[in-house]
Image (tube, one colour):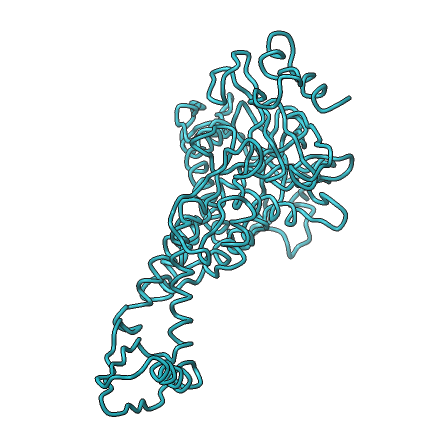
Length: 472
């Protein structure tokens, strides 16, 4: 069965003609093929138009962001490293759902493929690869091949979308039909592989507002900031390469011929340019004058200028500067324990928890949970969340105290637990007993005292044990 035949098998009836046109009509009408990256025959990727030099330009596709930002910018690498290291610490469990309410976590042999996704691979390896793809391509695609998982290169995957109305991705009846994987890239010449939607776990944590079935990289809004940071770094490098001094304009009043002038300039460059010539005395002949132009590092307030850009990049990554260790996060009150814990909590609650929730939901497609449960992430062994575990223990202590008070007040224990856990006091059911009356009264009154069994009569006791007077 060819690729077109397989794609046609995904739809039936009136959809087939509209969604998968016959091959002779050509690919010009084959609208369901939607590229994720900026290249290929049907591009829908982001194309930047910002003016930039060839040295600072960063490609907007997957390969461009990886090579132009991740591999060549220290701030982007630090932010991404923090995201990857924290994200990779989670593990997966199934979670029971009681009428939609999350319950306890439990394991199953079905989770083995997530614990060992491929030979020598771990859950952390799987999570790291998926987040890296999603962060730089906006999308991560994982499929199941027998007893292993395969994370496909995102810019080699095409999303196939169809609608009976022959519309676009925003048609009311449009839906994802499947995916096409191009081994080696779209122009490799190798045959593509069609995958139905139930075979692919599509992880896209940041949605693309221009296409509802595609994700967007968090780097897209801060490409200019990354370029500026690279330019600032180059500026700093040039500053030191040229003697760690401001630029100079050297003027000569005497007339000098062209060849003599160029020879004089060459001597100046040779004697006063570069790190080896820094801080040397500048000697000028009669008629020459040196004038400083531009600003030095202090006048430019270089640390503030570059630090502000670093903070904006960290904000786009969802990582607080104090967690990454950026310059603006390593000063003032940011370093005291209270502020650091607040920053850590912000990263955990605003960035990491939604990412873990999203990836668990996407992996349910290829690792289906048992009935009445869902695939969920387990954060009990994540070092980054240890302070949260302490807070959770304190919350449990408060809940236990509340339950105890409600039971002492006469409410039935089961209803007290449900009311506290559900934060709904209307679930309380009273027993009709109060305080010390929690034990029902006996029908015949209080019991009469009973003599201990086998008590020896007084007349048979030894003389030293008889009561005074010799009578019992």
